[in-house]
Length: 358
Ligand SMILES: NC(=O)c1ccc[n+]([C@@H]2O[C@H](COP(=O)([O-])OP(=O)(O)OC[C@H]3O[C@@H](n4cnc5c(N)ncnc54)[C@H](OP(=O)(O)O)[C@@H]3O)[C@@H](O)[C@H]2O)c1
Image (tube, rainbow, N blue to C red; front, side, top):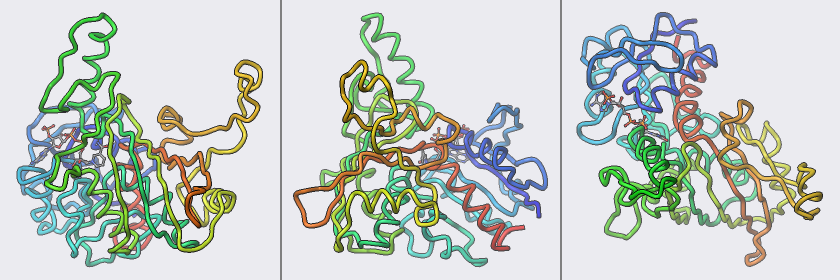
């Protein structure tokens, strides 16, 4: 069954949605209707599209609309989601505007797809750093009940949109040439090149940034644990694509690192997770670095590999020896794909499978 679909927003996330729809053979009944703030032609994926200036009549006849626009009062979903719904579409939103609305499900298909029914006209997709964390945590929560989470993130510049990628790319040759590095203060507060900024999104009165609070509130909503203690430090690092997270998690029940590795390696129990852990497979570990105990682990560069581009990679799974039952782990994923585009396309695929779409 084929579906008529629209896309609002053609930044890095919009581009990845186009790619995901094509790669995953999403059954489109007609070419994707693409919209943004102004009309032009644009290459998305490897295809040229007519980009329309968003208007009410463009939503008529669409069954599903993917929103990948900016957030806030002038953003795409605040301005256009209700119009799309009134025209008869289901809306799947990448932005944060509706994520904590009690009437809007916040969905990661591996975890809580059952919250989407034929009556759910608006579905929110979580923040990129939340998505990869919950995909790794939910299977462990099922088995050993999480008691507390402490997370520090290492987030790519593409998480802040195309302007941030361009800012870093401009700074790199300036840095190498020994020139003064300029930066756009409307993107990041300081130059990002060869530095790490513990500042993602706006600061709040509490001293936490909005990104850190998103990880707290969104994780609680997705796991259905409104009081779960979670605390986060979100850091921007000079990486183009891919977020990494050092997660410390304490459990109510006993769970060992070996058990966690086994659970997360089982695609039935932990869909979407790939464990990269255990003894190093690198011959140089012994030969050059004289380190026979060296282990393998995922890094942000791995998410550019075809086999890992939609996965949540988990490594460095270790017992936290300071508590009765706790683990440390390292979680990596592509912020533009599983953190955004792949997740919304998977939601639409599931809606098709369940007869909600199509
Ligand atoms: N980047 C990530 O890792 C990530 C992960 C998860 C979620 N998200 C969320 O996904 C969304 C898109 O992210 P991005 O990085 O691709 O953003 P981006 O580079 O800023 O692109 C935003 C796009 O939305 C369009 N747009 C903005 N306001 C609009 C409006 N009122 N009506 C119609 N179109 C509008 C813009 O149009 P013009 O091109 O005409 O300006 C642009 O094409 C954001 O809400 C972001 O928070 C991003």
